[in-house]
Amino acid sequence: MTQTNSGPTGDASTFSVSIRPHVAHENFDGEVIILNLNIGLYHALNETAGFIWSRMADHEPTESIVQEMASEYGISVEVARAMFLSFVGAIEHEELVDVKGSRPEGAAQHEGQTRKAGAPVTWPVMDTYRDMQHALVLDPIHEVDESGWPVVKVQKPTNWTEK
Amino acid sequence: MAPLVSVILPVFNGERFLAAAIRSVYEQDAGPIELIVIDDGSTDGSLEVIRAAAPDARVIRQENSGPAAARNSGLAEARGDYFAFIDADDMWPPGKLERQFGVLVEDHGADMTLGRTRCILPDGTLAEPRFFMQLGCGLYYRRAFERAGGFDGTLRFSEDIDWFTRAREAGLQLRVTEDVALHYRLHEGNLTRGTDVHDLGYLPLVKRSLDRRRERVGVKPFELPPL
Image (cartoon, rainbow over all chains, first blue to last red; front, side):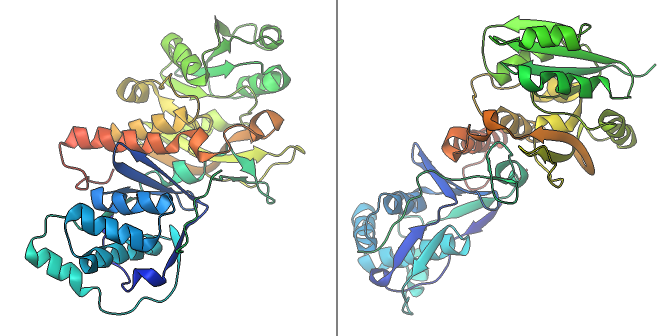
């Protein structure tokens, strides 16, 4: 298991983010589990990360999510945006989403500021597990591709684009 | 005297390939075999095929309950020191049991061993060997099921992956080898089922596994040690 809570930073309003077709996810009473079917890794999100991911999956615009975070957690929009961008960087690093648009410098400092201030909100954290890799990526009860080997598909890929 | 292997074969309307599956079991050369066939409510000629191809098999007939419940019925009847599984449309390659016996005898710490699988493509050719975590390519000590329990009869798909997950959580040791231990047939009857990850139930399976481990080790979420 590894933890990821850092990534590129910048202005969320320039982003477009798409959850990739090979990514399946489900919210279990508040805990979001993400499955990367290409490589068999799965991820568990803490509450803040799940807050962001669930709204992405519902196609909410980035700035709306940032505003909701600021309201929900009682933090500034700037800190909320930094948290949001940090999480986007993490899920991009794990190849769960495609991110388009430039990210300006400067938002990373908000993470440190939040922690030093002892803000009540928890930074978005994603745990990554590799222990079921063979089982989850290579089950043969699927369609076969042109090479004759099975493939897994997610029937309803979720796409999310900044409006 | 060689140890007894209980071979568990569930079938539901699988008359088409069943005789070939049974033949591949009897062609193994690894000592005594106890073939347990669970007819899971078939309405085709599966029972007749069983009686013709495996007159000595122990046959359990039950209302259709799914492969997990059918295999559990087989486990309840199994008397062997080792367990092995085959589905009605698959085949074991010659020498599978003998090779896997050798693996378990040599590796005293292993509770089970899995080999590679070759898919039988619809045109009858064999694909290159790959590793799939599934029941049919394995040989298991009885103790593996005594420790991990049987299959979750509520699952329609992925009951095998669920079992492997619980086996790992129980600390069972697995030895994976390069040899081919299963020919998995792809045909119209199984190509179209469970093609969507949500149908397969992977996500609830992963969530249940996480919760079991969190409860067992008594740690908060996100402090979970890897398996």
